[in-house]
Image 1: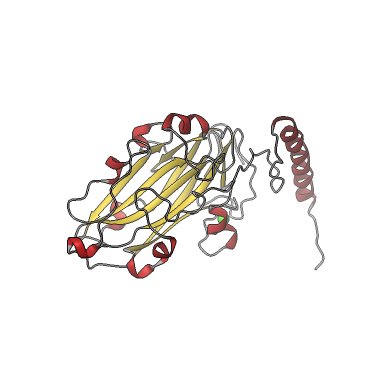
Image 2: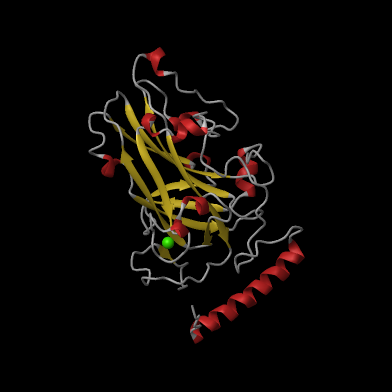
Amino acid sequence: MKTVTHPRQNQRLQRQSRLLAGGLLLAAASIPFAADAQTYLALPDKGVETQKDVPADFHKYFGQRINSWRDRQRQIAKLDLDADMNQDGVLSNTDPADSGSFESTPPGVVLGVGELTRMVIRLIPYRVDFDGEVVVTLEVEGINRGARTGEFETLDEEIASMGHVRVWRNKDKKDLLLDSRDPTKRVVEFTTDYKTYPYNLPLAVPRFFFVEGVKSSPLYSGDVRILVTVSHRPPGQAPYAQTTSAKNVEPEVQAPPERVGIKSFRTSFDHVLMTVTPNHVPKEFINGNNEGVWVAPPGKSY
Ligand SMILES: [Ca+2]
């Protein structure tokens, strides 16, 4: 097929290649390892692949095996967290360019300081036959790409070594859900009990939220992750937020169902990796951003 390059596209390509050249020079000057040459931005190094790159059984709270995590029969709901990975202004559940592998590979979503992007929580209940509560958590965490475990030694080290993001319920930034630098705002829970589940899920759990870039990722690309979980909480179990207030505390693991005599279900997970950059990336929207997926930094445009 013959390829035709539009003059405007051409200009953009030239601009991109200049940016790429600039980025490589900058990378060569400041970063000891090869920069990510697949994008035209000077992104920080990707670091090593870590155990936190997929939202699987590594989560310290749940301690599950990846096959169990994929076992839908035992899950209480199907859960997807979606972002506009290919930055075209559309959150697609079917476009491979918006798919899970990009969500779990650095740099993930590239977000400029002052820029906001919308993410969608797709939650499809599987089960209605249980006692207790259905709990959806939204969590922000740093990934240490200098270590295979992805873990930092302390929360102070984590906060100092990662990009800073805030999560808002809406783009008006009035209702703050998460702040990666505030130890009391790293996880938020939405709860609904069996009497009303799944009927009130849309009311209890936000359908979407906005992530704001606040401070750029200082060391690595993909150093921030937004994690969502949906889990079954048997009657009488402590809220998740209470068990994660301190690092290195081994939280309680759910007892097997036969011991407590009630049905218990697997937790579903999903996450999206992010990189915060000093400036927002120019975008090629296919719909003029009319869904409002992206909000440019104050005083800036796309
Ligand atoms: Ca998209």
